[in-house]
Amino acid sequence: MRYHIRHTTCYHYPESVSLCHNRVQLQPVEREDQRCLHFDLRLRPEPHLIRSFRDFFGNWIHYFEIHRPHGTLEITANSEVNRVIDTADASIPSPSWETVCRQIQGGDPSPETRRNVFFSLASPLVMPHPDLSLMADQIFTPDRPFLEAVTDLTQRIHDSFHYAPGATSVTTPLTQVLRQQAGVCQDFAHVAIGILRAKGLAARYVSGYLETTPPPGRSRLLGTDASHAWFETYLPGSGWFGFDPTNAIPAGQRHIVLAVGRDYADVPPVKGVVTGGREHRLSVAVDVLPLDDMPTGEDPRSVGDGFSTS
Image (cartoon, rainbow, N blue to C red; front, side, top):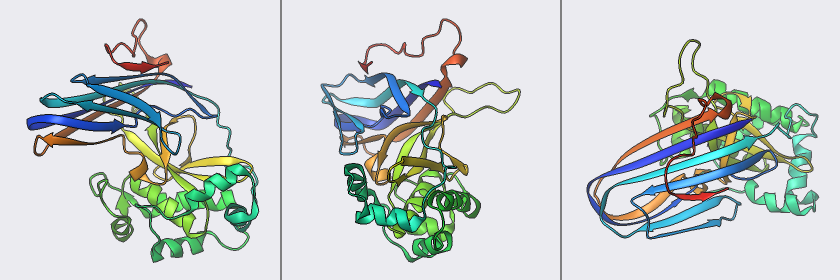
């Protein structure tokens, strides 16, 4: 399935900002099940410097600087992505979770597994917690097949935690999420990652988008989609398997991957510093459009001059 994604972020400052340094992670990653066919990044005001590089996890980072006074910063990313048929089927037979743990923690000498041991360790936003260990013990019972247990984990988070936009922010600690049993997709991904790591299993955070469908008889509203988050867990010899606890489903063709990391702190869409400006007002608009739905003759990439890759 081919998608066009438009992601616009605007910062409005009550007083002019004299200088800003920012890095954005808005270019979808390339992997076996996904190709980024085109990427265009448009910045207003025009930056004095922009450069691109890949981070430790293979995600694209676009860094830019603006040295002139400005009251508004607008960042618009347009992407065209081909999401291919899923290569990782969570319904396939899998070994016990204990076997997977032993492979990750030293039993599998393959370079890929050795690289992914990193994702079984604690990270800044997902630290060990007794509640995570308790949930892990309840789900990962002796000799239970690994993928069966992870599927159960996904469903349990969906059933036990209340989806409540506004109940948390990007700075809300995981301990508070566990206490209030409420949050958003970012929080649910962190809970799942913490439970898996409590058993020595490898899990990583995925930021991206989920194609949504308007209710029957309703038109798709522009700008009303949103960023999404889920998690992936590693099965040596088979690769990464994605699960979406917010919706209690495996990650599939409708999940478009932006970036992966240990937790949200590794993959914020926009991060930076400014001089001046005081408090700012932030607005974000996201559209995820199957290209077949685009009106005839309309080019979703026609956003003017910008930094682009194809």
